Figure 1 (cartoon, rainbow, N blue to C red):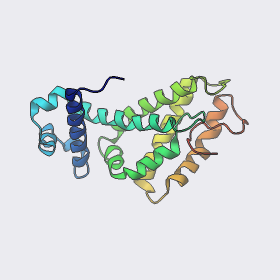
Figure 2 (cartoon, one colour):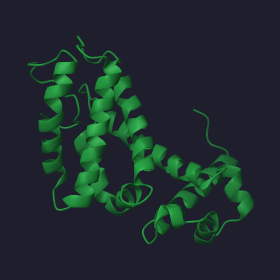
Figure 3 (tube, helix red, strand yellow):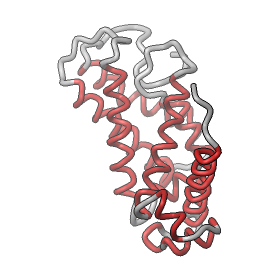
Length: 204
């Protein structure tokens, strides 16, 4: 693998600086109220630097979401189980970064953020369902099952952050399993299969 050049490293540092500036600002004001000028002031970079990396404020936000989803890939690599979505580890990540996720999901821009994240989670789930790690006999089209799982998971995360923040990741994951497993297993033709780990990177 080629070593990143000095220019690549500078670019990565700048992008991270801008992402962090937006996250910091979202702790104190709504996303809709944040301007590019606010971000520039927080990050201490110039207009030309910002627009070299991101055409709009929205592009900066969704670039950050892509980085968060990269966390899922790293979690999957830590297990040999046929994981679809490592829900418990992701929920633990949400707890560690609670203020960030509250800023992303709760507020006037929450629906748009959740929709973007759902699209990416659905693609992640579908990719792993058809990767051959599970022997499927689907009764429902796999894309429909993947969308069901992603939507249910994000709705539960929003509920947790907004209504029941005192719940532990383990408690929320147990709710997720109780609600989602029966439908997902039936849809994939795996109902009654013992030991199948569909939506959690932890031990059953």
